[in-house]
Length: 614
Image (tube, one colour):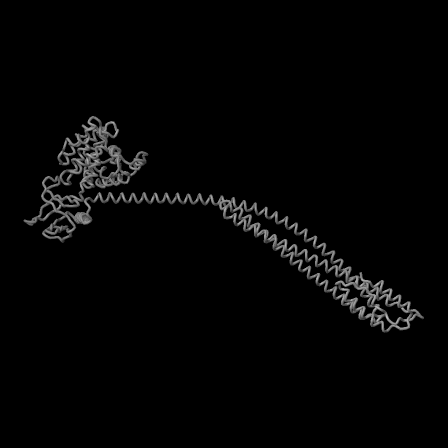
């Protein structure tokens, strides 16, 4: 496959040279001539009828490259036997066809035609396996460095960089004609004579295209006579050949190299220095180099050839070319990976910027919602403060009423104290009055308890209002988030709405409880007023009882309290009146039985008329 690929590169140039109109098609007569010449240089039999039979339906028309390829593969390349021909002859044929059309020289050209041919072959060897054939800048630089190394000069990198910076080179790569024009310009070989350039090009050509790892003179020890003779050695990956001199016309022998061979350094002997030996399975070849450096270079080169045979490779420079190509591909993959990573990072940055913008929008919406909530909160607080002030006014009025009641009770207490000094009989009544006062205190305590309950209910109402506001705030936050997840948040809003309704219901219950507490307070105040009324009534009764009996009036034998009309009602004065009735019965025994009937009648009328409890 490698040999076919190399042959196709040269044949492609020959085919395109015959395509004068650059339409991708060549006439059949020209292809017949090309096929005949190819069969001649490849040493295979040529069948002139096959091409006519292959395209007998299109005898007069041209044949495209795609149409010629099946014939070329079947009748020419499939019959090629490696080693039966010289590839240099095939390259020379194709070069002759393509140079007539594409290679132009003038008086300023510095390359002889043979050097241009060798550079063309080197270009084909190092070019990419794609059509049209081009060579990447890295391979061009590698080839020029090899040529400059052969001339022992430094590469003019400035001129090379100027040429590489051209747009056509950067976009498509080097074509062989652009490469030859650059070499013909003389900018890279300025100050170097043509013979040196020719020798360098030929050396590099033999090294890369001819697979010559190393060549030069060595002294070789004969196997039969055991004498030493100087020979020209040429090392290739599969053999080490030696000739009489460097023109390589008189071939003296060849040493086949395989994985069983090895090279060793020998000590000096027989008047020879810098010796080495090459061992095979059947023989050992002793050789002597001119100096230690040459011996080391030959040893390394032979070891490289043996390594290539061990690895099953036929060409060192093909292997190096594949390695350089793999390195370029790896660099390209790394570059693409870096570009993809940069694109990904750029996309992430754009996404981050977009997220930040969305976040700013959400923050702005949140600030607006917060402002609305603060306004609602301020309005609710104002309403609550107004309600609290109203309640404080009502409580202050209740305190004033209680204070006035307490003042009045204090006055009544003073009057009762004076009457207690005058009449000892009314001590039990005074005790009942004290019990009434105790009941009033208890009523005040109940009022305080009811007021504390009311305050607690107000606090609960405030907590419920806070919870309601929190639920409303959460509901509004969820409303803002439901722009992309509307269906799920709708269910959450319904649940929050139910919770809000439950909270409102609880607030209504708290308000109902507060209303009941207010009613209880009013009932306690009503009881307190009733108790005050009862105290006033008993004071009136005591004043009547303390009226003195005039002289000559008879004491009634007894006072009947059967005429008391005490309504059966539940108030604090009921028990007090019952105790007063008992005390009257006890005082009735102390009344003189000889009192006047008028006093008894008047007293009876007074009790019947004035002691009625409304």
